[in-house]
Length: 72
Picture 1 (cartoon, rainbow, N blue to C red):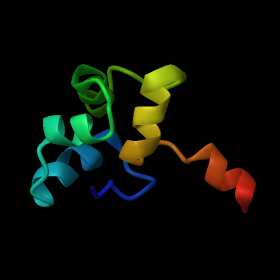
Picture 2 (cartoon, helix red, strand yellow):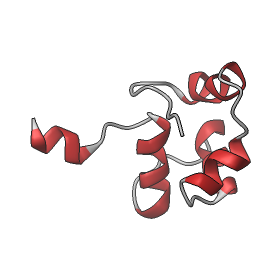
Picture 3 (cartoon, rainbow, N blue to C red):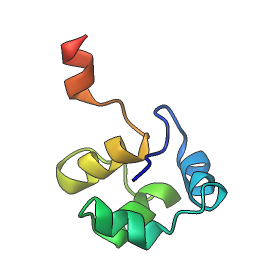
Picture 4 (cartoon, rainbow, N blue to C red):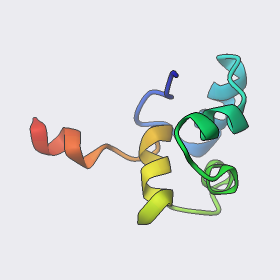
């Protein structure tokens, strides 16, 4: 399943889903994420510092992937 491009703001990531015809709940199920965590990230209520919120922020393109940065 597609992922938003990296470097987005939460509002841009929120707009990416309908622009690409993707349901947020379906996307969350595909990546095994809690829908409420993802929605809180997109609303700006969570920053994604650790745990599943951090993983979701990386998948949403809100934070850079530390594994990609180390590999470069």
